[in-house]
Image (cartoon, rainbow, N blue to C red):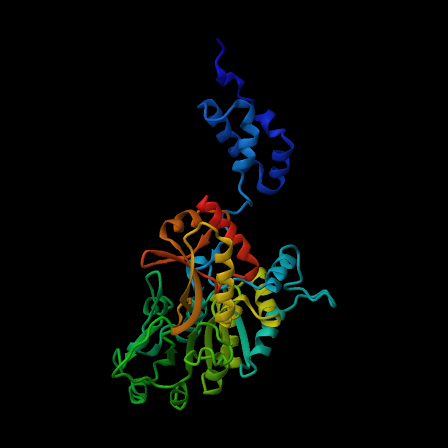
Amino acid sequence: MSDPRRLVPRTDAVLADPRLRSAASTLGTATVKDAVTRAQERARRGEIAASDVADAAVAALPDRAASLRPVVNATGVVVHTNLGRAPLSAAAVDAIVAASGHTDVELDLATGARARRGRGALGALAAAVPAAAAVHVVNNGAAALALAAAALAAGREIVVSRGEMVEIGDGFRLPDLLESTGARLREVGTTNRTTVDDYATAISQETAFLLKVHPSNFVVRGFTSAVPVRALAALPAPVVVDIGSGLLAPDPLLPQEPSAAAVLRDGARLVTASGDKLLGGPQAGLLLGDAVLVERLRRHPLARAVRVDKLTLAALEATLRGPQTPVWQALSADPERLRARVEWLCGRLDGVDAGAVPSTAVVGGGGAPEVELPSWALSLPAAYAAPLRLGAPPVVGRVERGRLLLDLRCVPAELDKLVADAILAVAA
C-alpha cells in the first residue's frame, strides 16, 4: 500500500495556484511559501486532505504584509497608547499614501532647487499657533524636550520643580531623559509645593532655562501650590514649557489642559508637545516659540538624529489643515447618540446576553486624568472578551465587575454592524 504522504503536492505545484501567485505580489514570496509549507505539513500529519493544501495555504495567508492589525477600540479610552494613540483622519491617511512614493519633501518644483524640508507642515503648524514666532517638528514629544535640553542646556543647569519630575511611561523618567543630554538638573520646591521664590533663588550664571512640566498623567490634591508660567516669565531666565498632550489652543472641553497658544502668550520662550495625542495626528514632537531658540534647536547636531520622516510630515499637515480628527469626534460625541447606537446593537443580538449600560470614558494618552466623559456601552458576558479580541478584526473592550463593556465612544458609527456580526460569531 502506498504512503498517503506521497500524495501531498510539490511546493512548486501549489505555488502555481493563481490565488497564491497573486498573493505573492502583495505579501511577498517568502510569506506565501511559508503558508504553503505549513499546509503541506498539515496534510502529512493527516489533518487535511492532500487535495486541500492549496486551499489551506490561501486561508492561512495574512491580510497584509505587515503584522500590525486594525483594531476596533471599544475600551472607552480615546487616546489609547497600547492601540497606537490617535487614529488618523481620512485626510491624513490620504496624505500618507500620496507621500509614500517620490515627493517634493525637500524640492522646490518651481525652481528645481532644494527647499526647506516639510515646509507645508511647518506652515500649517505656524498658522495654527500664531503666537509662535517659529516652529520645528521632530519624531516624538520626548525627542522635542531632549533636543531643547541638548541645544540649550548641555553642561549647564535646568531648574525644575520636584513636583514636576514625572515618569512619562514604560519606566522612562523625565530626569533621566534630561540628564542624558549632558544637562544638570537643579530641583526646587517640594513634591506638593513650589513657589516663585524657589525658582528665583536657584537662578545663577549656570542656569540655561526654567522648565515647567505639565503633570498630565496624574493629579496632586490638598496642600499644594505651583507657579504659573506668567510668574516664571518675569524671572531673568528663559522659560521652557512641556505641555505634553499637544493641545494647540484652549478648549472648554478640557479646561485644565494647557495649550501652546496660551502658554506662549503667558511668556514661555519655548513650548514642546506631542502630535499624536490631543492634536489627533501622527507621532511627532512639536517645538514652538522664540525664533532664535528654535533656530538653535534646528541647527543642533542632534536635530538630524530625531528628524521626522516625509510620511509624518504629510500626515501632520493634513491633520492641521483637514477636518476634525477622530480624536475630537470621540471627545465631543453626544452621549444620547451613543446610547441609541448601543440600543440598536442590542436589538440585533437575539439570544445574546447583552444590555445597554451607562459608561465613563476617559481621554487617555497621559492627558486630562480627571476628565470623565459620559458614555454608553454594550454589556456582554466576560467570556466574550478573548474571542472578540482574537477575531477578525479584533474588538477590544474592558472587563468590569464580571462583564465585558464595549464602549462606543471611540467606535465609528459605520462599524456598528461589524461589531454586531463579530458578537454573533462569538455567540454561535
